[in-house]
Amino acid sequence: MEPLELDRQQLVDTIAKLELQKRILAAVVRVLLAMLRASGFTLAGERLPEGDAKSGILRAITSATLYPPLAVILRIVRLEPGRYHAWNSRASSLACGLDDRSSCPRTSPSQLTPTEVADMKDMVLSPEKRHMSLRILAMHAQRIGKVFASATTWGKLVRERGWPRPRKRIHPFIRANLPSACVHRQPTRYGISM
Image (cartoon, rainbow, N blue to C red):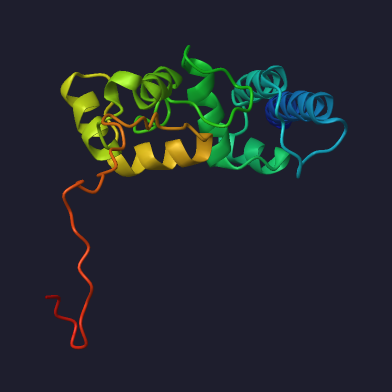
């Protein structure tokens, strides 16, 4: 009776191990299928610009991490941990989605927002502020609380975007006329007039 009980326990342990392996393999297959659907039947090497594809991969990885460790899944799908965590943080923030963009101001706090760039353009092109240099304009914008950027950044944006500064003459060009009483004297031999 004792050997029969031992065999039954071994069978139960084997079934439990096989069940765990089945769950792990199912999770890995789900992740691989999500990768295949999103990337056009390649497992690595290409960027995924669409946010829907990235969110599908994130969902598959999240459901798969119940059994194998996250590092194992990321190694299988050849996704770098840094990229995975960046996708996760961008997916959780409501300001920026997962679609590829040049940059997101929420993730780079020192980057200028489009509103700040528009304010800079208005100030640079304003005829009322034409007398200010870019350095003074940058300090003025900081004082009034509109744009907090250095004069170098202002100059860089003016050059890159081709914003022409309004340069009108404040004073008209005045040409001095010779006085009518001026007598032209002839120079002498040594350059002294007599």
